[in-house]
Image (tube, rainbow, N blue to C red; front, side):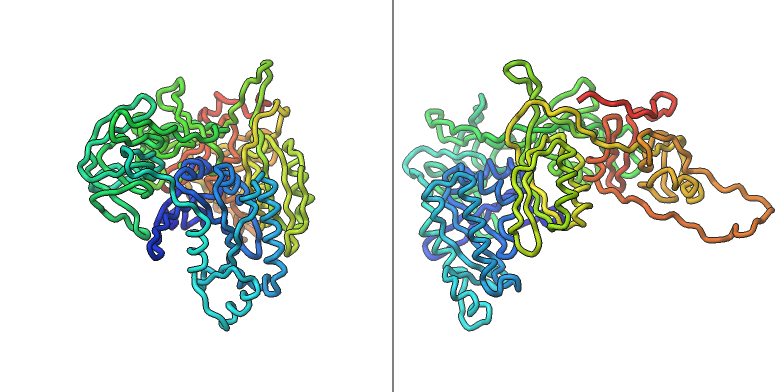
Length: 576
């Protein structure tokens, strides 16, 4: 169901999507939600559309860090959970011991999250989705893997029909539907997606879009339901269906579609407040417009507002400058995905360093957001990782070595400020084998200063193209982000300095040609290597006085003040 290019490239779910399956006389609507806390807004607005949940857990890896976040949201809604242990055919599960350990770990997770007695009595299904079978009988797993027995996914559908209650709806009441998602069609325009709470609706009927002072009358031009992965056009719908309606270009998430003004408006979708903010600006660099469309402030504002309408977890704020806008969200990954989408649309923009959103307590004290971080990693790296997180004001609250395959699971409570720029360092320490998940747990008094970046920047002092000879002469000063033959300009950051101060350098310096030769002059000398930084790594790396310049072809870092004689090279300690 992951249809976006970014979802397929990264192997994660970003947007919630829905489908349906017909089993006998029943129609089962299925909604796939993201697992990462940065996309928690998707989870929170979708939970109202469903009456139960399938918790999918790997038979060898067990409940992953992100499992906690989604399960917590489902339990809070009071949903009945069915546990699906998938990939039981993996070699690590041959004797069944690991599968039982995973079931016990999942039960502990349910208990830890405050599940009630009814939710703790969850049914368990053992599955091999790749081969298309599942079973509730633990003792038959081996025979199914060896092909001695045959099965299908029917036991899972039977469990859903038995355990998940049918939606509580009333067909005889006036039409009522909460808009939980939006889509767009080239033919009919904006689509409102949601579950019908009450009543029936037919094509061309007049209805009202209501909520938060909104009162718009419109005619329903198209009605769709979901059959499999396709939208199917129908003439009428009734309570309990998950549907898509067309007829208004002003649909917004949280609106209620009602039949008449006497029909009550449903409560608007509530999500957790944002914890960090980020400035988006038009591209003002000397290379603006050479690799993409250098959009004006009006077009950038419209694009950001469009994103806010589709994503309830993001908020939009004006700044004091006409070409800069502020978005408030959940995390760096959420912003990185949005920036990547904008650059793939052919636009050029600049973004600043993420800033944590502070609050003021009842007694006037400064409060900051705290997060619970769950880390799953090889045991050999626990010492280095613990030192890294404790250096960022993290408090170790849990240390579990019983994860199988030499892995450990650690939990820290750490300020959101401490997480900025830590993900790439964590992956480097764990050689890419570590899993990382976080969730906001509340606001606590300010924890003091946290060192973000101890190194300075290598800054180009002129416009031109980088030359290998010039870069070779600067190799002992730090590591480079760019290689030879790259266009640069004054104020552009080309690398990371070894020391804690910024350094203005000339990477365009060419070798002077003479008719005098020296011994060894013709030896081949090449650069030791480049530090290839991704967009997410740059978001973690930059400081308050820097911009990330994002174009469809390139991601660069530059100083906000380009002229070298107008900015200091000293890294002044910035107030927290």
